[in-house]
Amino acid sequence: MQRPVIAVLMDYESQGSFSSRPHYALRTGYFSAIERAGGIPIAIPYLASTTDAILSLAQAVVIPGGFYDFPPPYYGEPADHNTPPHPRSQFEDGFTREILKRDIPLLGICAGMQVLGAVMGATLFRDVHKVLETTTDHLNGKPAEQTAHPVSITPGTRLHAIVEADRIDVNTAHNEALDTIPDTITVNAVADDGVIEGIEIPGYRFALGVQWHPEFFQAAQTANQPHKAIFEALIEAAHGDHA
Image 1 (cartoon, rainbow, N blue to C red):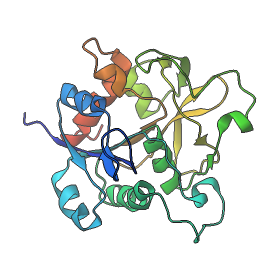
Image 2 (image 1 turned 135 degrees about the vertical axis):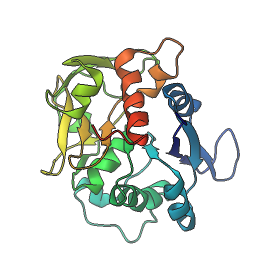
Image 3 (image 1 turned 30 degrees about the horizontal axis):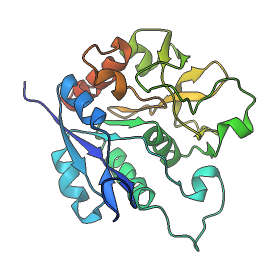
Image 4 (image 1 turned 45 degrees about the horizontal axis):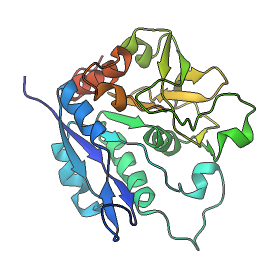
């Protein structure tokens, strides 16, 4: 069977170790995880004029993690017309909506899950530790290849069918978290402190988000099975598996 093409949205840096000028950047783990699961990863820049061609080529899309400012409406606040939006956020909102419009399989990881939730009508906490009383450090200092805390997987969800477990251990690195959830979204994973760790959108071929970073496990030679299964399920959906 031919490997499907999986488009991966790039992250953005205004400056950094690669260049003093604005540039796209993304950890190699995303690409390795897709390749190991059986896909061909391609990197996507923020060029709206190419969206149609890219989405005509891609058989699935990954919206990755990243630390950057979301637009105020994501937090249930009025739009700020005096502050230019972050380049990534300016592009990916419409890009994600177009993916859903075309019903292309979509996996959102960390910030990517939050974007998926927001375009479907959810709102976010800016800093989960300032809103919830929790002993879980969601912005964890451990190496991302190590698990940080468990999550409970909701029975009957697609994620539960994918990982085949009621609880799994995950890594963690996030300030924001989903707050209000509309009926269009199904919560499929929750941390012990109540923080939403996974969502899926019923009625689509594959529209799933996880708050953790499964690519760190799948990219390793000895992939952790539940996290490996998430990427494998995306590849199956890209092949046309509508399960």
